[in-house]
Length: 151
Length: 151
DNA sequence: TTATTATTTGTTAATGATTATCATTAGTTT
DNA sequence: AAACTAATGATAATCATTAACAAATAATAA
Image 1 (cartoon, rainbow over the protein chains, first blue to last red):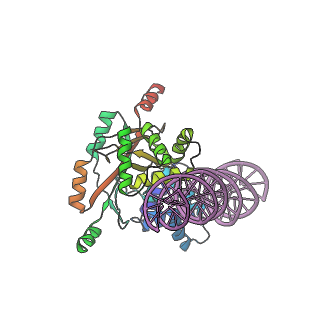
Image 2: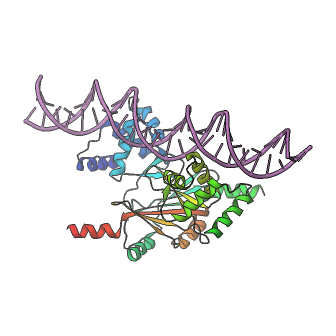
Image 3: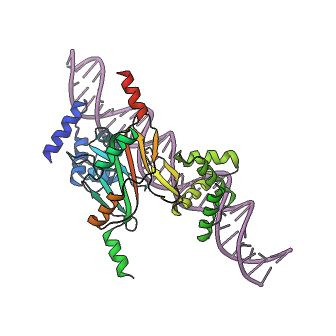
């Protein structure tokens, strides 16, 4: 955790931004709740527990900044709020979601499923791929079981 | 075109909705501008040209309805507005996008690229896939050429 | 047909997420 | 310390979307 923060700090400095206490508090929340697809409001409330003086706008600004630096992914499940996910280090941007249409649960897949597909896109469409977003909508295991039980 | 409208009409009736003139006008705009990833506001302005009395809320209502009936896909490129795409008939929901990070152009791919991947998801995660969204972010051919010319 | 009921509409107001403004504070540089 | 810059918190503004509601339209029953 401290190592990760140290690296983010360096990334910020490289662009002549500072890791202020507010920004650090925000990053810490993101690190602690890595799997949770938090909204800006969620993050704001969590940061507030530790740093009560922080303002909502600062959280938005920080998330925007981290998003530009590719430290977080700003994602959207179509429910009217943006959610922010810390990128895994290394195989960073391959990061897919399974959204259950019944219960709303979101599962995460870090494995890269699209290596071949990306190659195809680059070859056949001459489109230079930098990133991708892949979301599956369907029925999660639990809801399938629940549905079977009810029939 | 008329055939398509006829079918949508039947689909609506099957759920005891009517194809009102306002709804029909909206569908016609969607048919005419099939490739354009229009926002609700865009669609509203286009419908207004032909049916000036229509209200924005009705357009939203119609799009929501068509979305429920899976006639259109409500998609989101992360720019704060929802966009609405008429589904291709038949191989309906396989419908991907290439979004250029420089000029913002959106190209569309109708080919299904994910057959194998979907199988994998269903097998390994026991997640029953109903639909998916796949968007690539990168540099389009034109911008690549422009960049090469400038260097 | 006429009365009744249910849908759909247009207008307008409300909502809610995000962004802009701006005075204040903290950090740097000289 | 003085001068300058960057970042912050509070709040107002913006903008897409939704809700409320009265009027219009269509469907149904009598």
